[in-house]
Length: 299
Length: 227
Image (cartoon, rainbow over all chains, first blue to last red; front, side, top):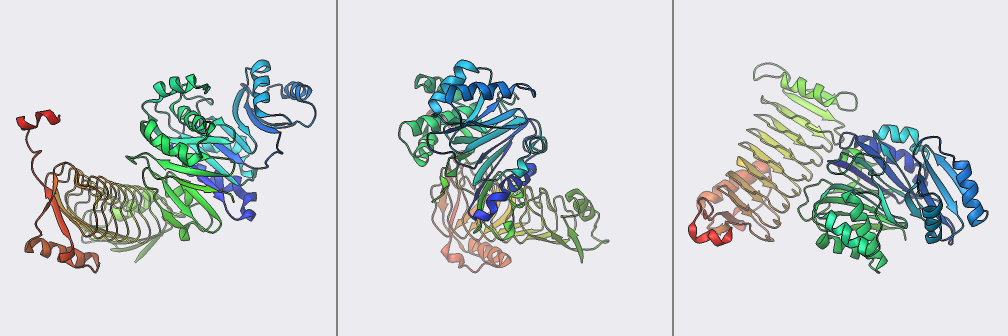
């Protein structure tokens, strides 16, 4: 069991309270996943040619000053760093591939949790209440966000094994369920050059979607292909730069509920997460059907 | 009439109060406010109570119900009326998966749609769905009636033992050992009685009946290749 939530803001005035609403939703999913919690939040797109990365350090007193000095020296001025607990969000005036290569060479101890134009991800072991408090998630604003509370059923309980998993630019995935063919699929994807940072099953799903989209598929096409290639139980919520999508496996054991008002679209493992949102009682509420892709995009 | 607001009262406190009512003592009529998707609201009732839940409920609302009449004005999460023994549970909105699972008796009315596995392993409960049911409904059903006024998803009645399934609309597919059967006058009587209880206006003659072909009751050597 795990808990997943997603919130897509339609009314721009609500973007200021995205972190507040996301936090309230995540708290309701505490019992579904007390092992770890994480969020991906989309806000403040950087200019084209720049890259926004989120890095996870090991230990609270990481020497971010030195890191910032080094990355500025490597890529010139214009870098911005924002520290949240043991994570740092860094904007670099360079292409993602160059930034990744530099990180790999100079700072292999740092864990890249996400990278792109808009996405930021924060995750850690423990309860969602601790994540919200430590990362001051209630202050965050943005256009859309995903969240996850994990009850581990396979790989280890560590921050690195926590969701969301982000394997492609601005692409992230949260998962409730378990995949049964992830080992073979991971090996196959590695042959296609997809890199994985853990032995977690959900990371394989994220890597799979990234690979499909890198090969030219749209998100919907990648998800359609996933129905054939992923074996196991899942409700996925997938975030992209412009929106998010939801997919349940053909058996549809893992719960999911969706709701929409004129102000927002939300998904969650259970309605009680959605009940925290303004206007939830009068929202259009439905259960997503198995094998059907639901997606929203910013116009 | 007692009123309980779940914004200020815990579900277990509500349920303890409802469990304190007996056939001869205690307030029979209850309103529950702000259910907000909480689990197990009005579960385990064991007396002729009347409970009105105003809003949407989470998992297992009205589970194990005996004698009580529970109405949910909104939607219900997974397992509404699971293992119902008697009484009536009514969902005015939609129900999530495995509504009425393994119910032994009583009646479950879902005025909207029910998701997958509605009436899975039903053992005597009567279920009336105003809209559609999802895939694998009445899986391994053993006794009772499932009435679907809309359409049914894939594998309806898969591995059914007994139980009567009535569907007015289309069926994506029948499950293993589930076949269409003749709609006789005694079935019309059952349909009319249950549709009246449900308050759903539908003509009994518009339904088709499905049930067990009874081919899976015993291992048959001629079917060995199927295993």
